Length: 154
Image (cartoon, rainbow, N blue to C red):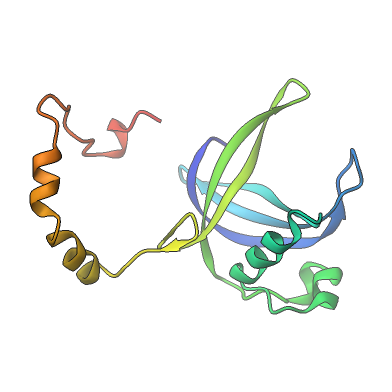
């Protein structure tokens, strides 16, 4: 696993509690395509007063049908739409001296941090209004943009 954005599918889910404090959570496991290899990572949607609204919002985004019994039953219940592809952002954090990878964002394909992208024709209609601004703002000594994944520094 490494940091980055990757396409993913749900591979399992259930309800659990954190090991350290017993905090309840809904756990969704993903198969993630990392550089052509299938890897697994789990998202933990915590059910605290501060996080429960965001957790349930994310579950619905993931295709959950609202069935609490099915969520309690786990993966055999089929309470999520099957075969839906997502984009997950993986980040890392240090925990007890070890680097741990975690799911930081879950987006539908075409979303960026929860905001849907416009269709290309609508986006171009918006951007055409700012063409002169874009051209005049370009720094003169800026290196060229990467043209392939090999040129991207991360």
